[in-house]
Amino acid sequence: MPKRTRNESPQKQAMREMMKDYLKNIEVQVKDGADVNSDMKDMMSVLLEGVLDEELDEPLGYSKYDYRNKNTDNSRNGYSSKKMYTSYGDMDVAIPRDRNGEFEPQVIKKYQNTVTQDMEEKFISMYAKGMTTTDIESHMRELYDIDISDSTISRVTDKVLPIVREWQERPLEEIYAVVFMDAIHYHVRSEGRIVKRAVYIALGIDMNGHKDVLGMYVGENESAKFWLSIMNGLKNRGVADILIACVDGLTGFPEAIGAVFPDTEVQHCIIHQIRNSTRFVSYKDIKTLMADLKRVYAAPTEETALSELDRFRDMERKIPQNIQILE
Image (cartoon, rainbow, N blue to C red):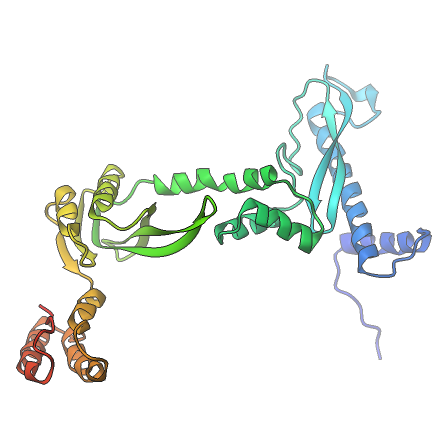
């Protein structure tokens, strides 16, 4: 049977040979995952320091100790130690410096404290799911045996804020065919207490049929006054007109929309209309009612819908007289 060969790049083949020599010559043999982690951490540190030294060669114009080719008044100025957080554990890396302080490393940037963005993405993901910086610190210690301070985690999560702000303030289309507006209510921890908050969401469909979240805003609870401020914000971001606004039955909502976009047609969301229609119907009658009601709101044309609505009204005697009928 022919010997199976690996399809490897020359770089990986060279790395494999180097690792064979390394494993033969080290005094302590690799016995378990902890030893592998330790060796990987050391190798990563050596690799990063080598790349950083090479990075400094380019702006200086000469390699280390090659003074004959030096053609600059700048020079190397030793190293500064920087602690990096990796999946293999904490790692100290020697960052080369230049005398003029002009060197800006790219492999490990100035304020970067993780080798990859993977760790930062973990912080941001946990923070977005409601974990406090203290919770994240404890979680990372238990899972990865990494000690990271609250302030470090805060610096990482704060990186998201300019991106969020840029998204919230981005220019919008001049005209939207339909904008759906509603609020989602949820509970969140604030100052040691669990409180209720509302996330206001405006979802627009432009004149080409493309869907876009125009904005998300956090408030105490849903109110027409807050929606009015959102309408003004949309107008300031370039929205001149909304053809149809689809909303729930919040008191004062249509007036808030009309104050900013007076030509907008306001339609109540079909789900809220159905809820209003079934609010006073007993549970045992819901299925019968919905079967007839569906023929109205799922009709293919307006003419068919009106016909089904008339038929539905003729059947009112079969259901409680105080039900609110769709109009």
